[in-house]
Length: 196
Image (tube, rainbow, N blue to C red; front, side, top):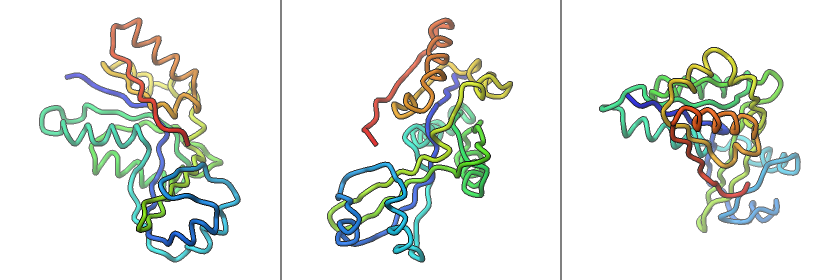
């Protein structure tokens, strides 16, 4: 059985409905995405108490879980994902959802000081606006790939898939994985994503 490993930035998506006026109040545009920072704290406070739909997110993580869903009957347990989460409830929820609900083996590096990354999707009649707060997702380091569990995943993988965003997170990890695939006649794939 061929195995695949994905390297990416795991985030928890939070989707809610809002008005165009609220987006404009905070300088957000419809059908756009930005990196979050402190200037959006008042927006989060204003929308506190609204109901959010929470789903696993992140370009690569979503691709890997959909791939596992497509292959579940033919190749169960063929997908793996590596990235960084925070030592918090959202990170633990994400790990349980990926493993138990979606059947993907995950090996997350756990950042002790930053929260698990998230992305707010504010939906309105004209489209949506995204604010990504990468937090721990932006802290993955090569030393984690050298751990027994993560290195075993890379060794057993026949296909290595890296999201473009991950190049700005841990270029040395991407280079190490690319060299490994070249030296072992494996397939290396990169998805060039949109900008943040």
